[in-house]
Image (cartoon, rainbow over all chains, first blue to last red; front, top):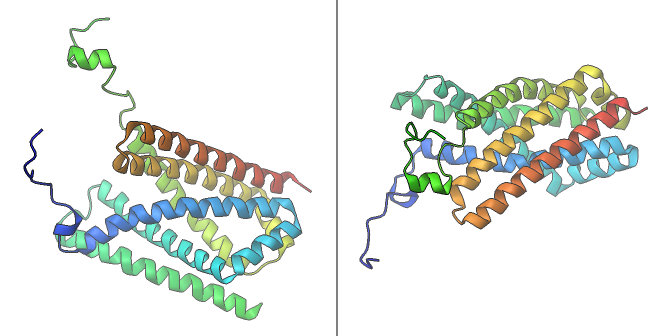
Length: 131
Length: 130
């Protein structure tokens, strides 16, 4: 085998960061995170099937500072994967593939998911206030 | 076997490599489950927000209602299916050691299938239990 330096294909570190890269990477990262979230949902359903005490233990866990942080992370991962997933479905159908549309829809995914998370947690906080 | 139409080299044929006869199956199911999850998920997020700090009795009754349980079951099956397909691509892209990749693929299928069965069983227990 030749020992001289072979040219490497361009990779993450040689590119200027662009929003299209961020949305592409985040779609994967949030997808993997959501698998963990779905295992948590399975735990919750098991607790609900197991009776009031088991359910209360789950609610206490989910309501703890660490649990709330996990729920917040899960909600954003879901919001992003959902909004960006719709974007991917539209692109699969052949829409929005021009560069400027591609960049614009990337920003819609990032900002739209943040707006969704704020909306959802505003509703949750309001309900906690009433409870 | 008629090999005159086989475009593979004899070596490829001997190794049994070539089309897995799966075609666009992976791509299509990823999209079909995505669309299903979009619709089912929107309903369930609305349901979850309307629950708002409900206690055990109310949460149990809402999941037990036949319509909600049906939507939830469809959501669980579609999501673990979608998860299996997605994790499979991640493993294919980043794990290049054949043995480790094989173990990872097996673990992926096992975890997704078991979690799907467990969560479906939990919903059925809630829906049919007294």
